[in-house]
Length: 109
Image 1 (tube, rainbow, N blue to C red):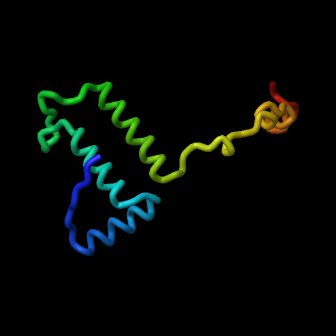
Image 2 (image 1 turned 90 degrees about the vertical axis):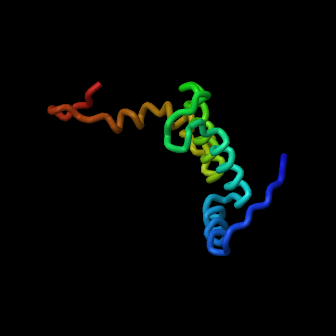
Image 3 (image 1 turned 90 degrees about the horizontal axis):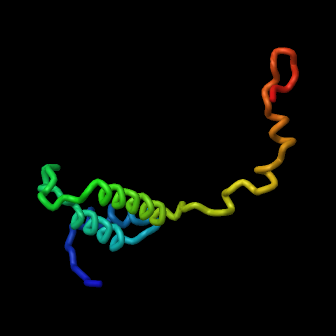
């Protein structure tokens, strides 16, 4: 991995640090992500695809990877502990309690 040096004004640096803290990441990681997206952008700058533009499959894969990277960056992720337990999933009594009654007041199956 290569190192680069970038100079920015104090206010930009301050705001970048705040935003990085909000995302629970570093300014370096933000810059790395930006440069990575910039390097993969296959347009002429005006939104017109360049001759070697990415295919639709490549675009979808890139977008999916960006979503996963965003999930990792915010550390919200998906946790197994957030799932419903097996017992709650198959609790037939709970299902029966939540069935809507028909007009006669009986449960509808």
